[in-house]
Length: 242
Image 1: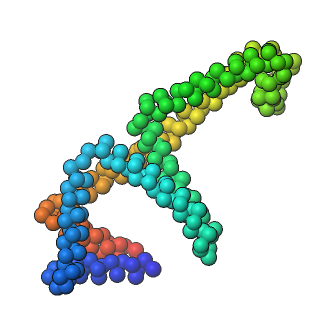
Image 2: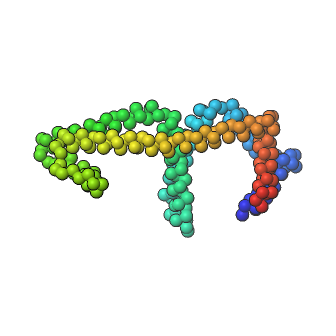
Image 3: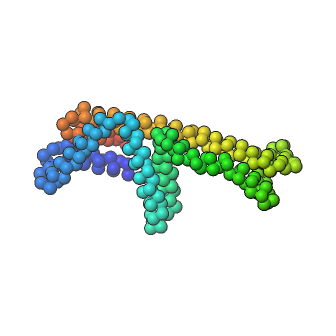
């Protein structure tokens, strides 16, 4: 399959590079001219763009891809003869796009993201004391229900809590646990976002450098330079792998 794809691509690129032979049909020539002009403008925009601009575009593209992969995930497997294979592929693609979008959003808009989540964090930290006040007013042991699994874990680790502390003490314990959970989540988010950010920067830099190489090869018609690069790469692939 790879060999057939490489040979077919070489034939297509070779026909294009043949020049006037491939452009004798006026409609096909008009189509190629439209593609050439469009790619030339795109290549110029890419090679002149900054890394920050490219990262923003990549973040938006990842968000669009995540939405597309989600739609494919809920539709294509139902219509295919091998739903398990398609489901697996689209799940990986969906979560990959989400990881790129989330990682870039976290790194590039960190302050804004934390600001938007500020009220959620405040509500989370205040909620144990609101529950303690509710417990004092009603006499219903609300906090013990929330802290039951945590106290059970402490007992398994050799630190049994018996008898249960007072209501306000349990509120402080729950608040401390929630702070610990938020800190762990914050650290894990950075642990995921930093590699995603690093790989995305490399990808953007690579695309910009590729656009510059194409412009060096063919400054007046970037699409011709692209075809030359593809033709060379296909030759390398055929020599190395086929």
